[in-house]
Length: 300
Image (tube, rainbow, N blue to C red; front, side):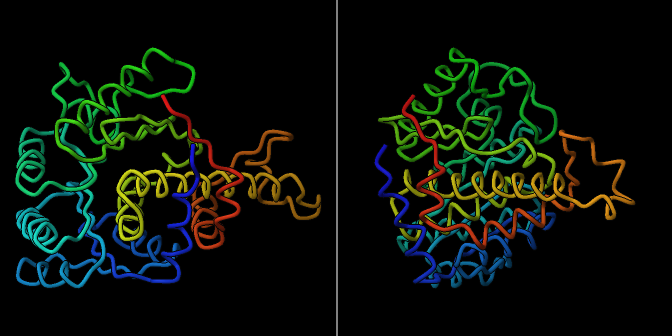
């Protein structure tokens, strides 16, 4: 895999573009901080009377169906249309389209009307959009039978074909997240194998990924933007986990008072709050060289 797409990592920090994110209020603060951490400038406007003007000033647009409201739904349509007219690259996150027909129909209307550059979702959400039979996801989480795992080649290839066909259908890039993240532009399908399951322990990491994708859409073509954003988040998570494990294993005996319940000899349990803090640290500290050394991307 050609790693030239990583050039967008450094160019983002140099340019510091404005990125417009219409996302869930549950994750809005973390999304803004993540955008700042990688070097861009976030704005999280969602009033229908101002979003078009803000999109035209921005270099990337991220919209999410998470925690949808009437105002947010209206604003996303206006923002996506403004992006289409102005040539601003956009990404849509299919959060929760397995929960209700309303969200699925809303997603389809946005995609068919405004043609976002990247469609993102977990495997169940991608399958629901594709129309691949009954989807059994619970809430906004992926269904067990849809999980993309590194040790199941059949499921990996089947999901890769779904991602590819969906990209062909809508003429865009499709990103399906999971243990192995799959991305396709309708020609090739790539599996991204970095990351840690601890990301699932923090709410809003999917929204963070969507906003990071909009950041890199301002620098590289959509296929590369999806790869770069996913790799930045996943590798940062790996580094955060490794750092915390090393710290825990080297804690002096005199300082173990109060943490003995979470210290289990050679196996270390990492607190959710500690991991979140370490993740944001690594997002702000990771380098393009570190990315090149750690990234694992293979064609499916």
